[in-house]
Amino acid sequence: MHQGQLRGFILASVGDFQNAADILQKTNLKIWQKADAFHRDQPFLPWAFAIARYEVLAFLRDRGRERIVFQPDVSEMLTDVFESRYDHWDPKQLALHQCLDQLCPEHTRLISLRYAKGMSLAGVASETGRSIESVKCILLRMRRKLKQCIQHRLAESS
Image 1 (cartoon, one colour):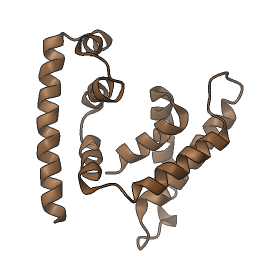
Image 2 (tube, rainbow, N blue to C red):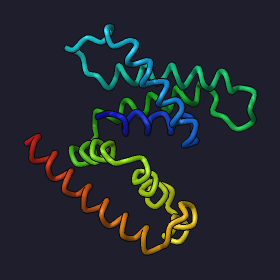
Image 3 (cartoon, helix red, strand yellow):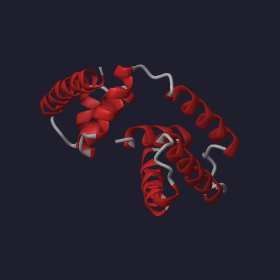
Image 4 (cartoon, rainbow, N blue to C red):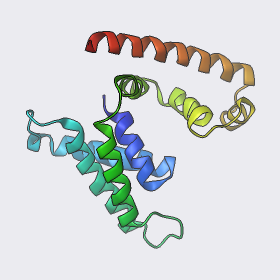
């Protein structure tokens, strides 16, 4: 349910999709290992962010010898900004992130390439080995699916 938020936080912290995916997996594993420590009367996401923060810091420490990597203090700053803004997301934005979590990784990647990275349809097609028409069709279906999901979530919450 919160994979999109965790993925976004980690990606903002390390700036690389592949490393973010690896860190997200480690974070998920750590969340399962520490599940007994979670108190159900507290919100889950801040607790999960704290675990993700430590996984990001461990990654940065281990990768500190590489040239292009965020310093831990920059990562901490990004974490604080991300966590503080999460509480202020409007319901549509929160619903969108929850709905994005439900998509398969392949579709999430297409959406990310097109809208987060701003690639042209031709660029997305080239990057994914698909035809432009195929990319158009998939993105159209995913936009419709996301719209329905958002509407459903907003109706549930009101």
